[in-house]
Image 1 (cartoon, one colour):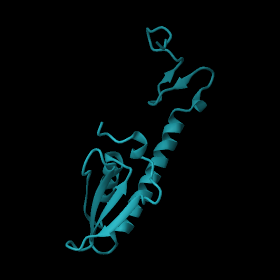
Image 2: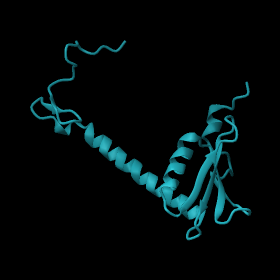
Image 3: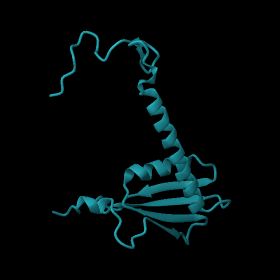
Length: 141
């Protein structure tokens, strides 16, 4: 079969660098960044975050082949900051957003708001049990 072993998709080999930055010689203030052992998930997050920054003129990515676990991210800035610095800032912002999302998720779904058997759902409506209306107990089959 042509597909690589699954561990090859996310485990770095000895001496393999996770990120390689190469400056673009044809386009001013641009760079192509190769990020290995990642896929469309991270690439699209980074692209979207980069496009929200006012100093970024262009951000796009491509996955050259689905059997090769890397993507190429192209960034062009307005010259006030380097593409590598913008990428680092985008990563820092994404880490902050994920941490905020995690804390909101944990706060929303903790059982700290349960008092005397009355619980509020995500919209503030009081509920009294773990069953749906008109349904019996949950059975895992």
